[in-house]
Length: 320
Image (cartoon, rainbow, N blue to C red; front, side):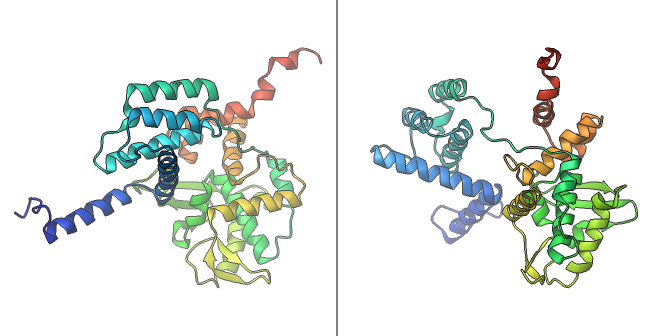
């Protein structure tokens, strides 16, 4: 019996089920679980209001729900809803209703009607704009932290969640630059990890290594292992770390103070800016992707093409 499942209903079987459920939950990132749970609640609420079954459901019900959802939501939201319904059914041992030909046909039609392009894309900015954003008081603890955060994000093309999760042990500083160990990321759900490097800069105001050394000298008094700790209004470095949203707020506040156009500026702008500026500098796409860790060439090219639409337009030859 050592290699067999225990009989159903026995205490051992219940323990095995609990372990299996825990493993299934661990197979998804926390953000994914929350997103799926929210989408599934929306589906269940709709089904209840329309007196239809939600789990298990059927293709006709799913198709009707998706069509109604498309009246107010984007294609990305609809796609998440489909993934959540599929996941809930498979996890419950039910047949996936979204895999039917009818639902796939509905999804195809919705894609043609709504399109799949994002409704709001983070704006990339260039180095002169970056310098404007960095023109704040960098002598204070908050100033040192924000300068290190912004420059590291710009130079490394890291995601905001990765920046917030960095610990002191993840950074190795040398005269050459910063060696960064990224233990887990959005595109690395198995936790294989990655190591990237940020070279020392050539200019004092934009050198990520110099900015990081200045911040770490202040942060050394923090009880937190996280690199980017919170700072009180009085300049005290606190134990708590930043969240991904905090990274967003810091950049937007600094950009607003510098009177940089805020439309489309978010923490993701720093990642997008790295990719577009590296491309403009003639860095090969494969080298950019090694740093940004994009698995999809199409996604990486999307940043580059988006940044070059004005320069590439044939309207420039019209003599206007």
